[in-house]
Length: 437
Image 1 (spheres, rainbow, N blue to C red):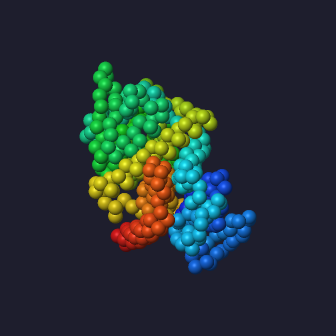
Image 2 (image 1 turned 90 degrees about the vertical axis):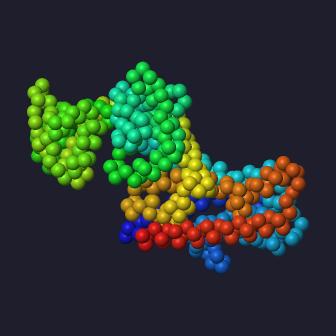
Image 3 (image 1 turned 120 degrees about the vertical axis):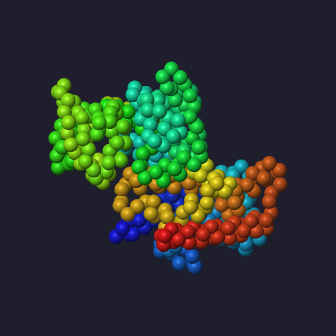
């Protein structure tokens, strides 16, 4: 059942992304009067189709190979390698007869649609999420720095300014994933302002950190109990709403972050807490669980800001572009040899495992939005056979005013297809290798 859920999410996610991508090519082709012979979701290898129908001159259908899809544009050198039609004189309704600038938009249409789809998905998720935590709220107490953050130079109480002179409005933008690939964060400490460098391997160290703590978080506020979970260790210990925890095992814990850090080291162990209740100081004993938790919620001192349509669109665009930039930097590390392709690249099996065995719509759309951005970037890489390869030849023509011959385009397409097949085989075997280990 778990495998079926993963496969189902993979097929639905990729189907949506492929449809959106090919729709971009289709719409621009039709806009410029170019005939589209076929528009297919999945591949109809061997001519076998699950469903097909024709409207006008275009055949629409669903193939039987459920990974990908295509939009066959008349007069374009693509994966079909239809040499016979290319030997004829160019027709007014063919791709090859159109000006270079029109062909440019037809080629880039899929990438643009995937980029727009990613932004729309992230915008919708923010609207669903409802609100964000302003950085200025967190800066009232400053951040709580955990061991990994302290090792880089962060200190508890630091107020985050960001990287451009003032703090990002959302605290979630203070340390985007791209910064963990190498960057810097600007903080205020007392009356001083300083930069703290983030080495390029920080994300690896955080992933390997068994504590699960980030560099810093918002937990630098007093540990005041808001409510206690029923039948929890906190309830058995006698904690009540309104209690303020001052110390653990004789060590001062002035903030919730300090309290969490203490308890993380005392999993499945007994601890003694010093608390204040109605002005009186009391001592309580409790036993932590396997995660170092007691089972209560704190009195959260911060106020969230709600998203409106404008802010959701603005921040949805920001989130999408940040995620895109993170993936670009990640691919750059692979190409420069800083990362191993075997550890980084994933195929269908790996992507299915990322979706997970539980169908959660929020997670599904987040991953699908992320994949839409990755698909946009991967397609724009100037490799023959991909949109970026076609774009490269078109830009060459626009600059030099010399058209690349169909024979050269056919050869480049063949080379590109071989490279894509090799990459596909690599990621499939890489996925299998991960499963076996």
